[in-house]
Image (cartoon, rainbow, N blue to C red; front, side, top):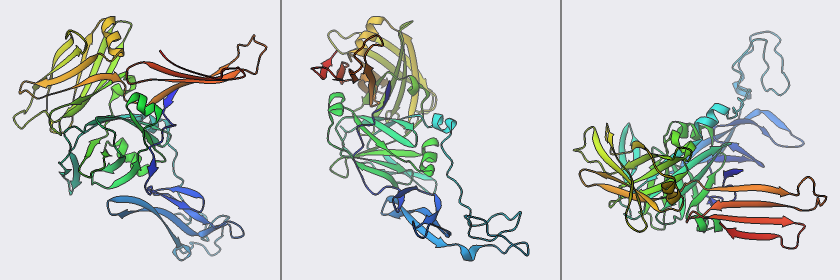
Length: 415
């Protein structure tokens, strides 16, 4: 069994965009009636709402309650009735009463499916929308700071994973106007993150309005370092090939805004490879349409050997995100080299612009785990345990087995 890496939390959160009423957390935009506890109980004439408000660039939640008794509409009959759990007297057929709270709809299967997998390429270029015009928020950054991210939505939580050229101190999720919706200070390296060179975390309890931004691909993510100008940002996009991704690559170029990522899927039955390349920063104003791009997959150890070289064309080159797909038959030996992280992918144009990166274990932070028990025909029912494992930065399988009921309860290994 494998799942998003729940154990590695994103770290300390700043004030979240949600509200606390008593001991209950309320989602941004939700409404409810004030429950004051015994002896008062629920006050159905006190309607509360979790409303957003801005604190500098941050969006946080604030509880706003009001007495709605004076808002009750005039009944349409002579003998209105006060129903249980209501504030206003109503007549049969009366609607639009202020003492009815809409239930927050649960996430249906289709919404969960549409929000499942996203990816981002992060560079020092950040954009903001103002009255329909897109402008840069920052353009000053470190040329060495690039990153690629993978995002998995599961039960109102967004699990994030990054490969970055240097470990950041924090992560922000930002809307297209530059408002900070969520900010987390990343914890120091855990053993998993140290072994894999990944950055892992989770944004929990995402409000419905922010889920809409994710679904519409209008959410940005920013990685932060100690100096304010060392921030890189990318936008979350949905890609169908993320569902079959097995390997990833962070592609780096010579300039701050030149970067990309490769989503790598493979087939072992008829050995073949499929590359989805997402990149930015290599096209100039002269690249108007139908621009050729060369994709090369080659070995990194010993004598240079080209595994794949294909030319693809970008119909409408963009200064933002460009996407191309390449597929080719390869040998089992090539797939073996890829599993050992001995292949790199290079993207280049006729104008001499290029970016490249090592093909590695996919960016997503994940553990594989299983419970252990005695065989059915074994009379010793006291022996049980748990095994968990993951792929490290070198492509090796790290495993840990813990058993109960035996002399040596822990086993560590690498295969």
